[in-house]
Structures are given as C-alpha cells and as structure tokens.
Image 1 (cartoon, each protein chain N blue to C red):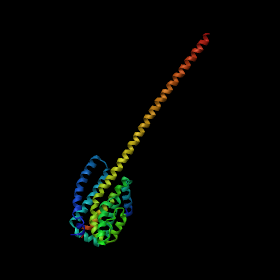
Image 2 (cartoon, helix red, strand yellow):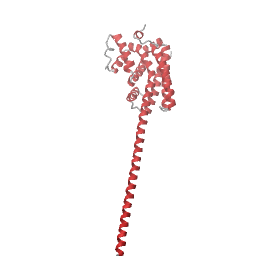
Image 3 (cartoon, each protein chain N blue to C red):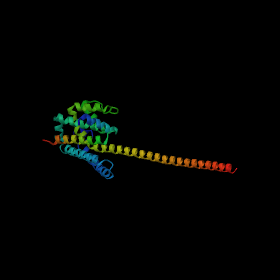
Image 4 (tube, each protein chain N blue to C red):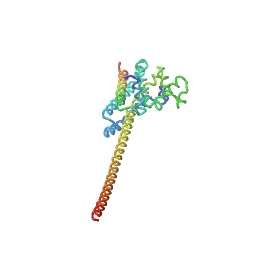
Length: 219
Length: 44
C-alpha cells in the first residue's frame, strides 16, 4: 500500500470523485448553456478545458505507475505540473485539497508537524517545499493534477457572478434613468401648471385693467 | 502567455475582477497546459 493510500488518498479515489463531479458539471453545463448565463465563446472554452482535464485524469488513472515514473524523471514535466498546482492554489483550491495532502506528504518524509499547524500556514511556503523536492512531487503531483477538473466549474461560477453583477448594475442604471424621466415629467407638469396659473393671473389682471379703462372712459 | 501572466489572471479570477476576455484567454492557456502534460505522460 502506498503512502497516499495509507493516508486515505487512494489513487483511484480522485478519479471516481471526478466522474461524479463531471456528471454534476455536465448537468450544470447543460442548464447554463440553455439559460445562456455565460457567453457561447466562454462556454466553448470551458468545455474544452473540462475535456482536457477529463482526459488527463483518465491518463493518470490508467497508467498511474508509468506516469509516476515519467514525472520522477522529467524536470520539464515537474515544472509544468508545478505551474498547474500553482494556478489551482491561486484560484482557491489550495487550502482544502492541495495544501492538505502536500503537508501530510511533507510530514511523512521529514517528520515535521506541518499538518497540525496548517491553519494560517503560508500556502506558497508549502508549495515551495513540494517544488524543491522532486521525491515529494513524484507522489504529490498526480494527485494534485486530478484537482484540475474543478477549475472549469470555478471559473464558470466567477463568470456568472460577474455577469449577474453587471446585469444588476444595468438594472439599477435603468431604474435610475426611469426615475429621472418620471421626475422630469413631474417637473414639466408642475411647470405647465405654473405657466397656466401665471397666464390665468395675467388674463385676470388684463381683464381687470380693461374693466378699469372702460369705467374711466365711461366716466 | 507566460506563467507569470497566467498567475496574474488566476489572481484576478480569484478576486473576481478578471474581464471575460481575460477569463477566455486564461481558460485557453490552461487547457493548453493540461494538454501538454497529458501528451508528456502518454508519449513513449
């Protein structure tokens, strides 16, 4: 039994979870596509990303030992995997699913107590330790890669939230414009009334003056 | 796109300040990176 299996992270487990996640994401995708919540171009790119992540997970699950050997022997591959891990950690998966296993692996090989003090630990510090030790990254890399499957869903959530905010802003602007239009109409009505009153006043004054002139002439 | 540029957009995505254009570029690049790793893992 490998170390990862001992600590509960079986090599098959992430793939099984991934397929479940895929079903949920697929349903979400279909709903989002039908409701048009993100642009068609972004939907297409997110689908492509999800497919790449799916394929990668299949490769990892089908050829785990061979893949591990390749990672162990290729600095270039390790660097690429590190880039992916770094991106995953940037977007926000690090604390829950990447840094945790990383800390446990480091603890296992070094006897440190990193896992116990994980709360508040600098994530970049953990990632640097993983990166600088090729032996650790060999065990950690494939597990971490499997979490790339979550990225399309996270990006989609951000895009939808941004769009909702933009729509809310547009709605507020439209409401404000309508209020201003209503206010303008009210102002115009008031002005019209004032003009009518003024005209009536002028007419009354003119009539009174005419009456006065008529009386003066009659006298 | 450099890794630093990707990380910069990843930061913006996390902070929810990335534009849709940036998100699309990032998604394309990330797909490309995963594709490269996949090819590296399966090639003899």
